Length: 434
Image (cartoon, rainbow, N blue to C red; front, side):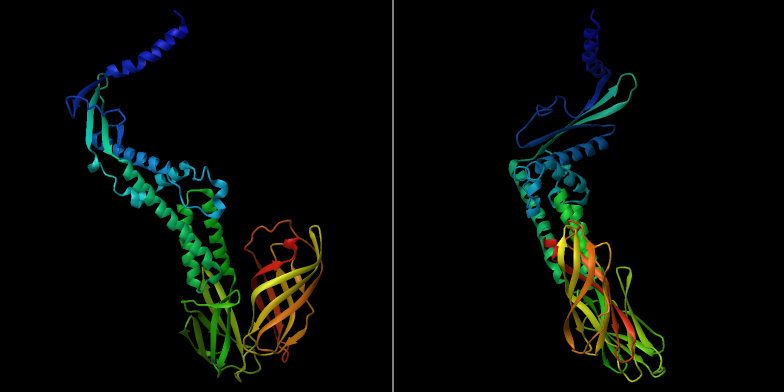
């Protein structure tokens, strides 16, 4: 006989041989129901095996859940953001993405999966089988679970409602980014975006959520501390985000090199720092250090004062920086002009000696030095300066949400004392538009 024919014959014979080894020793009904291993309209028919009755029952419940998930995943049409157009497949998200998400999240008791229970099964049939040789036993378990079309429609609608709510939440967080009003709001929104990134089952929306989260995290770097002298021994400090005040609930820690009786009182999102300077000497440098803890990092301000009650200048950069190159030659720019807004909060005259900026666009810092100009006006002041030279820039900026960081050196025109003020602001350039 042909060897190939013999092999094929043996393969066909194996299931029969295995079946002959198993004997039904107990069953839930004398006759096998007609629905077993059949397709029945408006029902799910599942078949599983387990070593024990409890294991088989649990496997059956899991299989019912999986089939419902698969049915929902194959029929949903989720709410989309504009950026998802490239990922659409006939106007829908790939069902495998939805299925994967639902399968991973079923343990979290999603609303539309909570009602699945074996108590809803219309019929159950089982058989206990024993291996004639090894005497090992198993349970074959069948379930007839009602699942009418209207129930599937309800589950799909419930999922689409949940998905649309997640998209609305994302859009709300995106709209809040330029309007953050408190330090705590940054942390709350980062937590919310982490949750959304875990929820979004497609790469595009997950990427959008993670990118927005990074933009919120960058706000921590844009926070600065400033303040104003209210009276002798009384200083009001607050936090700025890109030059505008934002509130914070956590009190700062204050220390001084000479002042005593230090105290901090909340004041509508800001804080009043009071101190006794009677032990401070007029011919020495006197100061109070104000330190906030934000996202595990220090955010500080050193308030200088004299025993006569006069405060050092309080000048803060704010708004957006505008940088323009005189000319652009391929990937090289020449002679960059900076327009910057500063707020002379206390109105004390100050000199501006230099500004140094580091931009993601340029590998070397931009240095604007030898300015040596005195400003006396209180409030908002526009400053213009030029960094001469040539600088290489990349063809495309790596991110649309970037900050320039650096410092400006201020000079007290009366004493010659210098103070560095940190700069961390968003910026625009004319070479991005070439």
